[in-house]
Length: 336
Image (tube, rainbow, N blue to C red):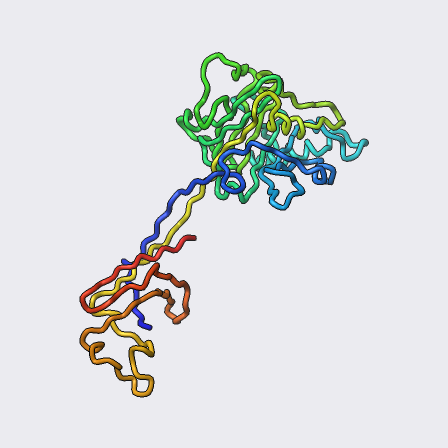
């Protein structure tokens, strides 16, 4: 074993943006959607609905995203207490997202410049979107009396809007970042606002029921003090009844890498303490040819700190022949 102190120029830090498909097993598009009757009937079922890529009771079932509904008046769900008006799960959800996204309990959501008092929220499972969703890759098909393809306007927007949740993009009619233009079945009235918000930094999509109601007839029930089954309304629109359903999106994360350049010059690392190299009793070199023309075959690089503590180990793909006529440069990459 031989040691060599690394110099400052031997260390380089690099950051790369890595994108990947969002769903289980690296699937770029989710085409089948399942719910859990156990979760829906439980206490959490009053607040959100988990969506799986396969039957929830199967061993390979994994949560892909969750659907919830928020209403500033508490409409569309049963009251916590019949004697306390407007206090319900939908009002709690609205307040939670208002604090998370807007950071101000006195501010309301405005989709496309139009104030909205209710919304659906699709929250991607945290370990799926990693650091953030990748703008310009999302396509969500909703179907009711007609069908609607939704995407974000990141490709068409010249400026980026930020709030407490990070970047904010309008949800518009389109596909994979391409915004549909002109008069077509995907249009909506300017009085209803955009279709919602795309919030990539928290993995969340807010859908404006006012806009979907006008364009494809997807309505959120706002009946007072009663369960409107709004989770299931959106789930049925996502799972598809008019056209084949699909949900496409990519994740994005920044991976920092430490590059460490280990240099073995021609006069270095040509001898070994391996028992096959020296005599165990006298410490002398066994073969005379090893004196003037030694050869070694390094296979492993260990990285130590100043306290001689091993921090990382790099394995070469094959043994490297080293002698006085050869120099080696090995690049070690540490991702974190």
